[in-house]
Image (spheres, rainbow, N blue to C red):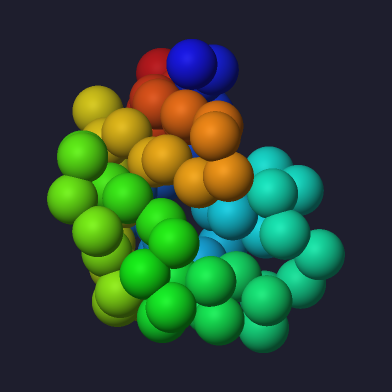
Length: 71
């Protein structure tokens, strides 16, 4: 699991996938989320604009990301 630093919260789920280079574009991020391939806190998440906050764990394509708010 790797940490993802954010400087404000909340951040939309699709943006994290895009900025962490897990997908090639925002459109692709929205598609994989809508298709049910992304988990947030061990639950399938299909809301593209799900608000992600510090402490959330995102899983996609055998990668785990823990969201951490920069202080």
